Amino acid sequence: MLDESVLSRILGRALSRGGELADVFCERRSSLAYRLQDGHIHDGSIGVALGVGVRVVTGESAGYAYSDDLSLEALLEAADAASLIARTSAGGGVRATLPANASTPHAAFYDGAGANHVAQAQYVALLERADTAARTFDTRVVAVNAHLTNELQEVWIATSDGRFVHDRRPMITLGVQVVASDGKERGSGYAGDGGRTSIAFFDAHSPEELASDAARIAAVNVEARPAPAGEMEMIVGAGGGGVLLHEAVGHGLESDFNRRGTSLYSGRVGERVASELVTIYDDGNLAEERGSLNVDDEGVPGQHKILVENGILRGYMQDVLNARLMGTASTGSGRRQSFRFAPQPRMCNTYMPAGQSAVDDIVRSTKRGIYAKSFSGGQVEISKGDFVFMVGEGYLVENGKITAPLKNATIVGNGPDAMTKVVAVGNDSRLARRHYTCGKGGQYVPVGVGMPTVKISSITVGGTSHG
Image (cartoon, rainbow, N blue to C red):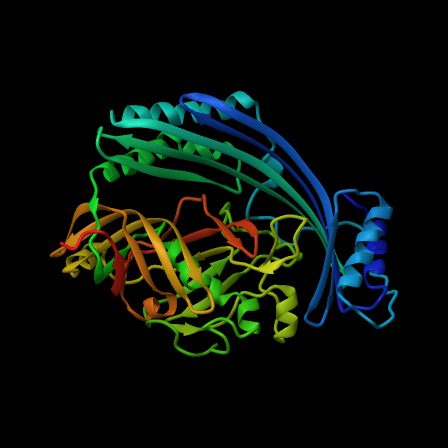
């Protein structure tokens, strides 16, 4: 988007007042989106975003400025602003030396070249197929909303220490929301999928499959009874249950919180922080997953990270700034929502590998508890690890059997405490369907989650029934 000579001038201006590191993040993002409601295409949009962000790092300070005016004057002005914000004092005038052409250190985790947009009718057809499938799945279905987004993000990243990389990142998502009613009770269900791939993804993962699953969940929730309240055992479902892992543990292992000492995991590398059954990975190298990256938003290749191994804390997720201050290396975890934001340490695809227990044995060993097959949202206080999650699809477990569906169930707990209470890990680990987006510090980035079926010996369930 910008040639080597222009990028070198911007970096030189960014460091003209001093500074230890500067980088330039150039982005061009094209997207389209359609939404179906009440059986008709309700709206559609096509957009293009184009801009450049400049960062200057000095010690713990980082100045950041961006511009969507790509004239050289505007970009040099952004570099001036970033250097002033960083409050540097030493004179500089450093000129970065960049390779003549941008490279992509990894180029194997998705095919950006094959992600071009196709005829609009093909997107509309997917939505209409989803609508038809949901309405024919169950006669109680009363409303179907479906959306499809397809975008291609291109980034060029140049740094004052000589990195100059380019990446093309596709992303397509199809989601279906279904409401069912028997005239008295209503229930809703959602299913979505996609990833860093193209519309061809839905040849193998059909919209009918997604719509039927959303309609099934909605129908189950129509029949659900009020959830009980109190302490009980909990079985977390494989795949989508990984969002609990992401929120309750993953954020606490991001390096900015740990460098500042505001995480319960601060200074605890090498210590036991979970049951010996618990191992947690974060991986940016999984083919076509939402959180995968050939290079992160600081130009560092995506990596496989071992966060917790058999209950022992092995390390944090690092971006460049926090890694420098903590005397270690970036783990390829520097991510940003767009050129309008500075990077932060973030998760990519966070998951727990398979354990040794058969799922049937886990259920049979549970006398009275809740089976949380999926979650529909929640909140976490990272400094304490306290969480509240709403169960999207849940069931009562009685005397070793999964019985009645439950509604309005929430679980309340503490992430690190819950990880010490893991008493069984199933042999069925899998990644969830690819539709998760993580929010942190006002920025939203796509992520992946996953885990096997896991049993936690005790959790607080917030329900409305005392039976």
